[in-house]
Image (cartoon, rainbow, N blue to C red; front, side, top):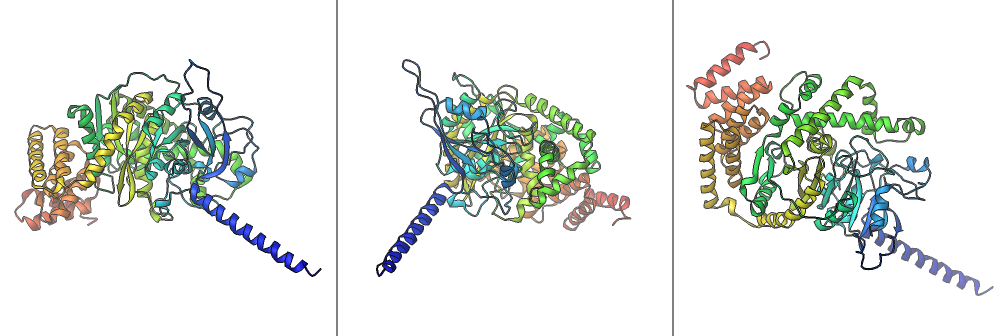
Length: 593
């Protein structure tokens, strides 16, 4: 009996030591997987075929899947505990996972998705497990398939699978600094994948290495390796780049230089996507009238964001309304509000959205043909801080979803390519090819990837834009732009002014001149933004005030337009154009002003 107390102390000590070691090990595991995984498992590939047959194409690679893909014997959680509690384990493994395993890859686990895989950017809610990278723990890793992106970015797997509906693969890839591929709609089987919004869902994948990205693509797309095709035109969507919240040329100039090195300058083209879509997607005009009472100030890209959100919410509710009404799960408040809003959507509104989607497919395919690449920013913003208010802001959502809508609504394939860092945050660019050109896009990424990384590094390390040589080159580009303007070649003039601004973005004249060309094309938002930049650089730039006044008048900002014309008169009291314009607006709108 005397020895019992000492034995108890020994047992207690061993117990505490065990708890300490377990806690230390648990923290280490959590730190090592960065919260990316919700379940570790192992699906092994079949034995290698006997020589002389070639080994499996994905031999030696590991991958993870977002918790949307069914795996036999496991419950698919869909990012919500109530879903997991109310559904049985899967009776079979999804077709895409089986294809990869049979192709030689080993599946090692399931990764975090956000609440019902609904968003392209994660909005934290009390039961959500957050995946994030160690060096960006304060930043959002994206939405929907963010856990799969983090698993690749943290080198936990060679590649991973996600579902991209409104950006669930592309945005996390951009925010995590890796490659993300959204294939053409319908190119890859969705059997055994939980639906989010069926007509927008695609099975996408992440990788760090473009060669692995391509190898996975050839297995999933069931396409044989062969000779690579090079693009014959690379189209920069200039107006889309104007939405960037970082210096535009930090992204666009890298693409331009890489293109010139690989394919020559002659294949570079520039497009004002807003103008192009306005002319090629006639249903947008009807949608604009219904949404904005005909206000011309809403750009096509912003309208497309609205279209995609309506389709997404409508289809999501149609797919899962019964479960939501039966189970009554706790949902993030914004999510619940969006589900309630969609109830009143009429059949006519849905049909209009579907018409826009069909016209978008024809428009983008016509623009790109079989050998074109459209270049757009992946997102306008840097990865937001966790809990940041900007995530829920209308500006953030519209700009981000608008850029995503180009490929989502047209059904085209898109790839997100990292371009290093800005203010310690990953930045990226996206390349889009027409529907069905997935292999061509994968080949293009493989060709350009190394040069894109080199040019991104060169840009960061160089100071050429601030040298005298750069300023002289900018002046030469401006003069070429002026000549093109005189010849009424507005798009060509914009291209030259773009070049001038990239070389020297501190010259107000370059912005003001580009605004004049935008006005001729009817791109009033771009014109207004350029004039504002010019005025910020030079408070006495009369032409910028006049042009901004014109742009604002066309956009319906009449009070602001009057102020611009009046300020031009302060600077130049004898300016007839300013006087006439101000007086005309005063007479027409005197009742309001």
